[in-house]
Image (tube, rainbow, N blue to C red; front, side, top):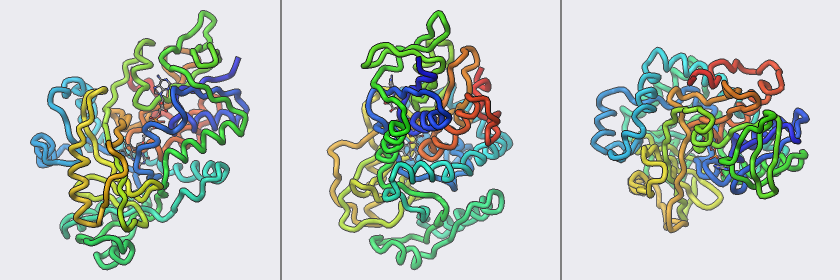
Length: 412
Ligand SMILES: Cc1cc2nc3c(=O)[nH]c(=O)nc-3n(C[C@H](O)[C@H](O)[C@H](O)COP(=O)(O)OP(=O)(O)OC[C@H]3O[C@@H](n4cnc5c(N)ncnc54)[C@H](O)[C@@H]3O)c2cc1C
């Protein structure tokens, strides 16, 4: 019998699997597909060490109105599916009140601060340096008022958390990115984040590293998870039934549905995002976030990748890439986008918790069941950092970062 079955081979799953293997545990990683093919494949590829404050729910009337009438490109919703999001959204709203948000951000910043340190050895050992740039990314501001607001926020984050940035004039921005045909009022260049030209490949390479370190990967359905009479955890896989003393749920947006039969009803704000690649004639040196139009355009292995903001929709709803169409239009005003690479856009879901913090720790009512999900907008960034925290909790070590704000009991 293995020590542990890790369910889910996205960035969250491969990270905890690696950490436990490093501690000498016998680990079986289970996924229905291959490592790094879902959300950890489709993101913008930014290891966001600047994201010390998580995405709060907007509370000002102007932003809420623009979402309600459908003019915001940051959030799009389908009215008929809103009732299924209601409880999670109310909790998200409550947690986004300024005093709570300050407390939540203080906790969030502690794990964001570890992100690049925990990725660094994995990138090196996985031999993936060629996918990484350590030069940050830039936020385009189209008007002077927006640029002034952007710089003021950056100054505040620098003062409070030490986040490094540089304000670029339109001329400096144009020099840095010669393919741009317009540079608006300039950009805020976040200097510390790292960017990855193929996030799925990095996740898969961490999966390969896990195998080289003696881990086992098998195909299987996490929906078959059950606890045996002796208390062991059992899953049906392509190699038959496997058992372990512990199980970790690291299934990203699918985590809550797998946990429901065990009596856990975690609320989740499921924010769908889309991406598509383009055969642009010129490329970009670093990703750009277009603040006014809520998309990121990033140089990737397959071309320039546009990723969109949040769509609140039904779990199995057909794609409706309104935000992607708007993003394409907006991107075409700053560079030559070229033809799309794929016929259809990719879609995936950010697994966001209403209090914006991931769920890390032991499941409250089951011995040997551990949780590692809900990383929201920054799961690609955070997987290795929270993976270490969870491994330390599982092995009885003192967590290197205070784990209390992330404990699952807060949703009991
Ligand atoms: C458009 C977009 C842009 C983003 N940009 C960024 C960014 O720039 N930086 C950043 O840090 N984050 C970003 N994110 C967020 C980030 O991608 C996610 O938080 C992160 O990938 C979640 O990782 P995960 O391992 O929890 O989930 P996933 O990567 O989705 O992994 C879950 C795994 O579970 C498996 N699985 C599901 N159900 C079953 C089952 N029944 N049986 C077996 N296996 C199963 C899946 O196959 C999958 O491999 C973005 C997200 C989106 C959508």
